[in-house]
Amino acid sequence: MKALIADDEAHLADDLRRRLARLWPELAVVAVAHDGLAAAAALAQHQPDFAFLDIRMPGQSGLEAARSVSPDCRVVFVTAFDDHAVAAFEQAAADYLLKPVSDERLARCVARLKQSAPAPQALLAQLQTLLVAPVKPEPLRWLRIQVGQTVRLVAVEEVCYFQSADKYTAVYTRDAELLLRTPLKELVAQLDPQQFWQVHRGTVVAVSQIVSARHDLLGRVSLTLRDRTETLSVSRSYAHLFRQM
Image (cartoon, rainbow, N blue to C red):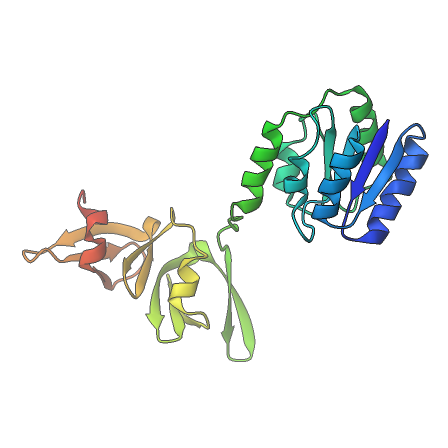
Protein backbone atom coordinates (compact mmCIF):
# COMPACT_ATOMS: atom_id res chain seq x y z
CA MET A 1 0.00 0.00 0.00
CA LYS A 2 1.43 3.37 -1.06
CA ALA A 3 0.82 6.82 0.37
CA LEU A 4 1.70 10.43 -0.42
CA ILE A 5 2.02 13.26 2.10
CA ALA A 6 1.72 16.93 1.12
CA ASP A 7 2.22 19.77 3.60
CA ASP A 8 3.99 23.09 3.10
CA GLU A 9 5.40 22.82 6.64
CA ALA A 10 8.22 20.29 6.24
CA HIS A 11 8.48 19.42 9.93
CA LEU A 12 4.75 18.56 10.05
CA ALA A 13 5.08 16.36 6.96
CA ASP A 14 8.05 14.53 8.50
CA ASP A 15 6.21 14.12 11.79
CA LEU A 16 3.18 12.62 10.03
CA ARG A 17 5.42 10.22 8.08
CA ARG A 18 7.08 8.98 11.29
CA ARG A 19 3.77 8.52 13.07
CA LEU A 20 2.23 6.66 10.14
CA ALA A 21 5.24 4.34 10.03
CA ARG A 22 4.66 3.51 13.67
CA LEU A 23 0.88 3.03 13.35
CA TRP A 24 0.84 1.38 9.91
CA PRO A 25 4.16 -0.35 9.12
CA GLU A 26 2.75 -1.90 5.93
CA LEU A 27 2.11 1.54 4.42
CA ALA A 28 4.95 2.87 2.25
CA VAL A 29 5.19 6.66 1.94
CA VAL A 30 6.43 7.00 -1.63
CA ALA A 31 6.54 10.80 -1.83
CA VAL A 32 6.45 13.93 0.34
CA ALA A 33 5.53 17.24 -1.30
CA HIS A 34 5.64 20.76 0.12
CA ASP A 35 3.39 22.61 -2.32
CA GLY A 36 0.23 21.88 -4.29
CA LEU A 37 1.86 21.64 -7.72
CA ALA A 38 4.46 19.16 -6.50
CA ALA A 39 1.68 17.17 -4.81
CA ALA A 40 -0.31 16.94 -8.04
CA ALA A 41 2.76 15.82 -9.97
CA ALA A 42 3.59 13.17 -7.36
CA LEU A 43 0.00 11.92 -7.37
CA ALA A 44 0.15 11.46 -11.14
CA GLN A 45 3.57 9.81 -11.00
CA HIS A 46 3.10 7.40 -8.09
CA GLN A 47 -0.65 6.68 -8.19
CA PRO A 48 -0.77 6.13 -4.41
CA ASP A 49 -3.54 4.32 -2.58
CA PHE A 50 -3.75 7.09 0.01
CA ALA A 51 -3.02 10.82 -0.07
CA PHE A 52 -2.63 12.90 3.10
CA LEU A 53 -3.05 16.47 1.89
CA ASP A 54 -2.85 19.83 3.59
CA ILE A 55 -5.42 22.21 2.12
CA ARG A 56 -3.71 25.59 2.12
CA MET A 57 -0.43 25.22 0.22
CA PRO A 58 1.56 27.37 -2.22
CA GLY A 59 0.99 26.82 -5.93
CA GLN A 60 -2.43 25.29 -5.55
CA SER A 61 -4.56 24.00 -2.72
CA GLY A 62 -4.76 20.42 -1.57
CA LEU A 63 -8.32 20.41 -2.88
CA GLU A 64 -7.11 21.27 -6.37
CA ALA A 65 -4.36 18.67 -6.18
CA ALA A 66 -6.90 16.06 -5.01
CA ARG A 67 -8.84 16.42 -8.25
CA SER A 68 -6.05 14.58 -10.02
CA VAL A 69 -6.13 11.49 -7.80
CA SER A 70 -7.10 8.14 -9.28
CA PRO A 71 -10.56 6.78 -8.42
CA ASP A 72 -8.98 4.22 -6.08
CA CYS A 73 -7.00 6.75 -4.08
CA ARG A 74 -8.47 7.69 -0.70
CA VAL A 75 -7.85 11.30 0.30
CA VAL A 76 -7.32 12.47 3.87
CA PHE A 77 -7.18 16.21 4.45
CA VAL A 78 -4.83 17.27 7.26
CA THR A 79 -5.40 20.95 7.94
CA ALA A 80 -6.07 23.68 10.47
CA PHE A 81 -9.40 24.52 8.79
CA ASP A 82 -12.66 25.22 10.61
CA ASP A 83 -14.26 22.70 13.01
CA HIS A 84 -17.54 22.88 11.07
CA ALA A 85 -15.91 21.15 8.11
CA VAL A 86 -14.63 18.44 10.41
CA ALA A 87 -18.16 17.80 11.64
CA ALA A 88 -19.58 17.89 8.12
CA PHE A 89 -17.29 15.15 6.87
CA GLU A 90 -16.90 13.06 10.01
CA GLN A 91 -18.98 10.25 8.46
CA ALA A 92 -17.41 10.44 5.00
CA ALA A 93 -15.35 7.58 3.55
CA ALA A 94 -12.22 9.76 3.43
CA ASP A 95 -11.13 11.38 6.69
CA TYR A 96 -10.49 14.96 7.74
CA LEU A 97 -7.87 15.62 10.42
CA LEU A 98 -7.66 18.91 12.27
CA LYS A 99 -4.18 20.07 13.26
CA PRO A 100 -2.65 19.39 15.68
CA VAL A 101 -3.56 15.73 15.17
CA SER A 102 -3.40 13.58 18.29
CA ASP A 103 -2.02 10.03 18.17
CA GLU A 104 -5.44 8.69 19.13
CA ARG A 105 -7.17 10.57 16.30
CA LEU A 106 -4.56 9.47 13.77
CA ALA A 107 -4.94 5.87 14.92
CA ARG A 108 -8.70 6.06 14.33
CA CYS A 109 -8.04 7.47 10.87
CA VAL A 110 -5.70 4.58 10.04
CA ALA A 111 -8.28 2.05 11.22
CA ARG A 112 -10.94 3.75 9.11
CA LEU A 113 -8.76 3.80 6.00
CA LYS A 114 -7.99 0.09 6.31
CA GLN A 115 -11.69 -0.70 6.26
CA SER A 116 -13.30 2.03 4.17
CA ALA A 117 -14.05 2.31 0.49
CA PRO A 118 -12.66 5.14 -1.68
CA ALA A 119 -14.11 8.54 -0.86
CA PRO A 120 -16.80 9.93 -3.17
CA GLN A 121 -15.60 12.68 -5.47
CA ALA A 122 -18.57 14.80 -4.38
CA LEU A 123 -16.68 15.31 -1.11
CA LEU A 124 -14.18 17.56 -2.87
CA ALA A 125 -16.86 19.81 -4.32
CA GLN A 126 -18.63 20.11 -0.96
CA LEU A 127 -15.41 20.92 0.86
CA GLN A 128 -14.47 23.51 -1.77
CA THR A 129 -17.79 25.23 -1.08
CA LEU A 130 -16.99 25.35 2.62
CA LEU A 131 -13.58 26.85 1.96
CA VAL A 132 -14.74 29.68 -0.28
CA ALA A 133 -17.88 30.51 1.70
CA PRO A 134 -17.31 33.27 4.24
CA VAL A 135 -17.60 32.17 7.83
CA LYS A 136 -20.29 34.24 9.47
CA PRO A 137 -19.33 35.30 12.99
CA GLU A 138 -21.67 34.93 15.95
CA PRO A 139 -23.82 38.05 16.60
CA LEU A 140 -22.49 40.50 19.15
CA ARG A 141 -23.65 39.66 22.70
CA TRP A 142 -21.80 42.16 24.89
CA LEU A 143 -20.72 45.78 24.61
CA ARG A 144 -17.62 47.06 26.39
CA ILE A 145 -18.25 50.75 27.03
CA GLN A 146 -15.74 53.03 28.71
CA VAL A 147 -17.29 55.28 31.34
CA GLY A 148 -14.66 57.56 32.84
CA GLN A 149 -11.80 55.37 34.04
CA THR A 150 -13.87 52.18 34.12
CA VAL A 151 -15.19 49.83 31.45
CA ARG A 152 -18.85 48.89 31.72
CA LEU A 153 -20.06 45.58 30.30
CA VAL A 154 -23.55 45.89 28.78
CA ALA A 155 -25.55 42.95 27.41
CA VAL A 156 -26.82 43.70 23.91
CA GLU A 157 -30.27 42.45 24.94
CA GLU A 158 -30.49 45.38 27.39
CA VAL A 159 -30.22 47.93 24.56
CA CYS A 160 -33.39 49.73 23.45
CA TYR A 161 -31.79 51.41 20.45
CA PHE A 162 -28.53 52.69 18.98
CA GLN A 163 -28.06 56.12 17.42
CA SER A 164 -25.16 57.43 15.38
CA ALA A 165 -23.04 60.12 17.04
CA ASP A 166 -20.37 61.03 14.47
CA LYS A 167 -17.55 58.49 14.88
CA TYR A 168 -19.24 57.02 17.96
CA THR A 169 -22.57 55.37 18.72
CA ALA A 170 -25.00 56.42 21.45
CA VAL A 171 -26.37 53.37 23.27
CA TYR A 172 -29.76 53.75 24.95
CA THR A 173 -30.82 51.24 27.58
CA ARG A 174 -33.87 51.41 29.82
CA ASP A 175 -32.20 53.77 32.27
CA ALA A 176 -28.98 55.00 30.70
CA GLU A 177 -27.40 56.71 27.71
CA LEU A 178 -23.85 55.56 27.00
CA LEU A 179 -21.28 56.30 24.31
CA LEU A 180 -19.66 53.45 22.43
CA ARG A 181 -16.39 54.12 20.59
CA THR A 182 -17.55 52.25 17.48
CA PRO A 183 -19.29 53.83 14.45
CA LEU A 184 -22.88 52.69 13.91
CA LYS A 185 -22.08 51.39 10.42
CA GLU A 186 -19.45 49.05 11.86
CA LEU A 187 -21.69 48.04 14.77
CA VAL A 188 -24.68 47.10 12.56
CA ALA A 189 -22.67 44.36 10.85
CA GLN A 190 -22.12 42.70 14.25
CA LEU A 191 -25.76 42.72 15.42
CA ASP A 192 -28.35 39.97 14.95
CA PRO A 193 -30.64 41.22 12.13
CA GLN A 194 -33.53 39.27 13.66
CA GLN A 195 -33.25 41.25 16.89
CA PHE A 196 -32.23 44.70 15.64
CA TRP A 197 -33.70 46.65 12.72
CA GLN A 198 -32.20 49.70 11.10
CA VAL A 199 -35.02 52.25 10.84
CA HIS A 200 -33.00 55.27 9.83
CA ARG A 201 -29.51 55.91 8.47
CA GLY A 202 -28.50 56.82 12.00
CA THR A 203 -30.83 54.64 14.10
CA VAL A 204 -31.04 50.93 14.90
CA VAL A 205 -33.79 49.73 17.22
CA ALA A 206 -34.35 46.51 19.18
CA VAL A 207 -37.39 44.80 17.67
CA SER A 208 -38.56 43.65 21.10
CA GLN A 209 -38.78 47.31 22.18
CA ILE A 210 -41.22 48.37 19.47
CA VAL A 211 -44.72 48.82 20.94
CA SER A 212 -46.40 50.60 18.04
CA ALA A 213 -45.75 52.40 14.76
CA ARG A 214 -47.68 55.62 14.11
CA HIS A 215 -48.35 56.67 10.51
CA ASP A 216 -49.21 60.33 9.89
CA LEU A 217 -51.06 61.82 6.90
CA LEU A 218 -47.80 62.48 5.07
CA GLY A 219 -46.76 58.84 5.31
CA ARG A 220 -44.15 59.42 7.99
CA VAL A 221 -43.67 56.71 10.59
CA SER A 222 -42.67 57.10 14.23
CA LEU A 223 -42.09 54.33 16.76
CA THR A 224 -43.13 54.10 20.40
CA LEU A 225 -40.81 52.05 22.57
CA ARG A 226 -41.49 49.88 25.58
CA ASP A 227 -38.81 51.20 27.94
CA ARG A 228 -38.08 54.69 26.59
CA THR A 229 -40.34 57.75 26.52
CA GLU A 230 -38.96 59.30 23.31
CA THR A 231 -40.31 58.30 19.87
CA LEU A 232 -38.08 57.32 16.96
CA SER A 233 -38.53 58.52 13.39
CA VAL A 234 -38.43 55.97 10.58
CA SER A 235 -37.00 57.12 7.25
CA ARG A 236 -38.89 56.39 4.03
CA SER A 237 -36.27 53.80 3.09
CA TYR A 238 -37.33 51.63 6.04
CA ALA A 239 -41.04 52.50 6.29
CA HIS A 240 -41.96 49.24 4.51
CA LEU A 241 -40.97 47.35 7.65
CA PHE A 242 -44.01 48.76 9.42
CA ARG A 243 -46.68 48.62 6.73
CA GLN A 244 -48.67 46.03 8.65
CA MET A 245 -48.49 47.91 11.97
